[in-house]
Each structure stands twice: as C-alpha cells, then as structure tokens.
Length: 108
Image (cartoon, rainbow, N blue to C red; front, side):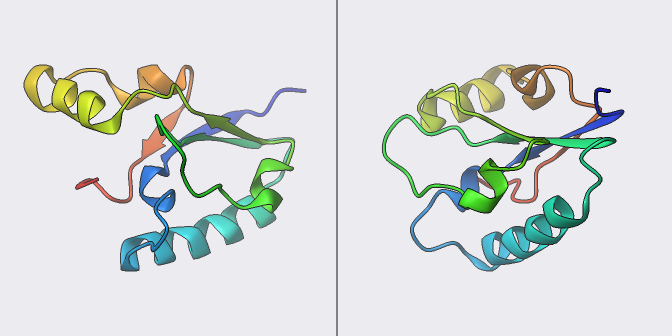
C-alpha cells in the first residue's frame, strides 16, 4: 500500500558544512519525524538540490523506505533567481506529487 500522505521538505540549508540554528533545529525535528512516522501512511520527499559537492544527509534518513531525496543538481543561485524573478519553479512541482511542502529556511 502506498503512503496516504507525502510531505515535501526543503532541506537545502542542511547541506552546508556548518548548519545555522535553523538547520540544527530542522535536523533535530526531522530526526524525530522520520523516526516516528508510520512508513505505511507517511512518506517524505526531501529537496536537497546541490549542483556540486555538499554535506550528505544522515544515512539513517536515506535508508528509510518512506524517504526519497530529490536532487535535480541545478545551481541554487540559478534556481533562486527564477523563483525571485518569475515566481517559478514551485517547490511542489519540483517534488512532484507532494501533499504539503515545508520550507523551514525561507531565506535560503
């Protein structure tokens, strides 16, 4: 049975070598959410766009059946320029088929 809810989360700010307070809080919250979520009913799509080398997301997240990492490998400056100039692309479109999107660090 496919999960009934898919949550899209922008985790680009977690790919930096030294996450900020928002990054540390997000990582702790995601650790708990991913650990406690029922894999049969909730899935997570993590938007981890990085054109180059980045810090990997925790292995424990990537091993879960209900976690998918989406990385289109587009430079974030180019992606952000499109968002600011054109209002596109929408994160939910890039994550394809999520029920809700959470972007904890809107300034990233």
